[in-house]
Length: 250
Image (cartoon, rainbow, N blue to C red):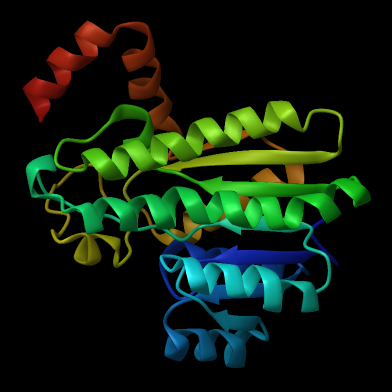
């Protein structure tokens, strides 16, 4: 689709992939609305990039509902929705509280579904739009000590594929983005730093560029970096072998 002249709503725009995507879409000519929690970071985004910003905590049902019912109708119809906001938790499952589980599911699953429901009717009427959901390689492979996070991102991936099939022929497409390790504050917030020497974290700008290309080309799925398709294929095709390799290298 043509990004120039479109209106894009990007969640998680305060930092990381969301901020990089908001900037990349603005550079491509879109009118961007950035949604996030950190108002200071959002102000700098608005001041330096001319992006419209709004503070909202997608973990909160009330914040999400208020945005959908009060703020969203004031914006031009959304042509591109990019669900970048995400929440993580690194700990054994036994150490996940009920609040941890609720938070992960709220941000990673409930919010993208609710925002998609909110913008979809007008997208379908115009017949040319795209929903982009940023999942994670954890949602495809499953990561020890990130069981709930993996499950939430897996749910987002399945939601994306099902919705894309449901919308076939309407002119509205869905892109699933599966990034690997990205250099953001995510690891600090999840409760444990990234301490592996390999794979090396990618800059969020690389993921953002891949997302912009996917929107322009109407791609259904993007894996960043591309070599991650190998373990995805191996797990799907030879799960026993993948399990042995995972234990060996894990």
